[in-house]
Image (cartoon, rainbow, N blue to C red):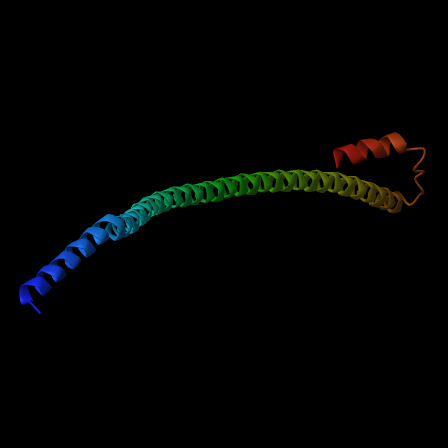
Length: 156
């Protein structure tokens, strides 16, 4: 056995195996690696897009939350204003009703005062007639002297 021939045979087999590998094994392997690299790159790009979309969505959410808070504050403010208006209307209505009741009470008091004066005049007139009757010791006819009694009531 010759060492050079063995070495040469091993070199030829190695060269054939290298050509076979470069021709039939290496291209599908590289294609698979390239596809895998592309999938990884696509996944990273999708991840970046997802992060960007998430950030944009968070901004939109914050804007909408701010708008909703402002709307709620506006509605609360409007409700408070309307409650104040209603309270003022109720207050004015109550004051008007109180003034009306006071005026009615004053009118009733005035009417009762007039009636009391009339009753008092009538009593004074009756007492005056009785006093005059006793002074004169004779009976005074109230119907006969009605004009005199009316004049006396007016003077009182």
